[in-house]
Length: 167
Length: 116
Image 1 (cartoon, one colour):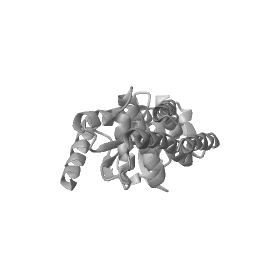
Image 2 (cartoon, rainbow over the protein chains, first blue to last red):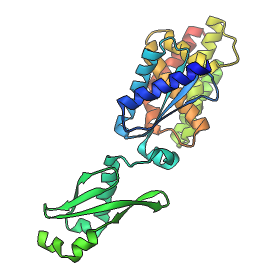
Image 3 (cartoon, rainbow over the protein chains, first blue to last red):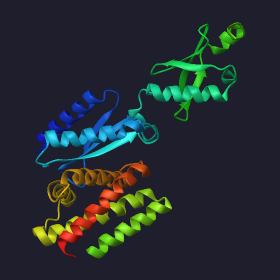
Image 4 (cartoon, rainbow over the protein chains, first blue to last red):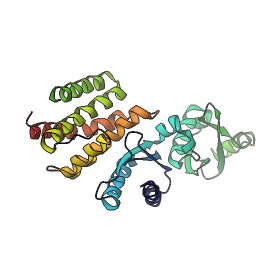
């Protein structure tokens, strides 16, 4: 039975990772019930939580139709993962990074010059002010585990008066 | 057991209204669980004392009308309850509320089928 449980866990984790490439998956046996698995999926944007749960139900029907093993969906959104399961936040999802960057713009003088986030990777956002000027923010996680944008060469751009030129 | 199911469901609703989400999740789940267990003992002669939660999940998945949908909802509710009991995070209140209507129907169905 233990071998079967291990195999089932691996199969389910692989299927979820194939279907949802960006979300970490960790499956545990329930401490209450040897035939129940906690199917934990992390860092899921809130709008995708239902889709991931529904897929776990599909796997139950397809892989375990006799219900000998019960799958319990435990889908954790981005904020819950960040707060309680930081070990599963090795990379910030691009959409969340963009939100942080936009909030940063609103709160700093950059926002007064109508900068906007136009592209984003997993580790930094690129911010453009017209097509002429470009800066980037890197992400400092030393601020108590919270994302903290640290301009990398925005100040140099301002010092060179490129902002004034672009405006 | 009917009284226990009713009590837990009502306490769960009060906890939810008070913002005590972990306690609400636990009580609401047990409100449903005890309804299914009551039916299982009376109608199926169920008398196991281990893996009981898993067995109740199996009954809801396979017995009665709308069992496919009800089985999924009950499994999600059980997942939230085990999260509330064992894991550091609190179940999201909007996701709990999404399940309540069906959970209440499951509870009512099994209590009626049990004849209590």
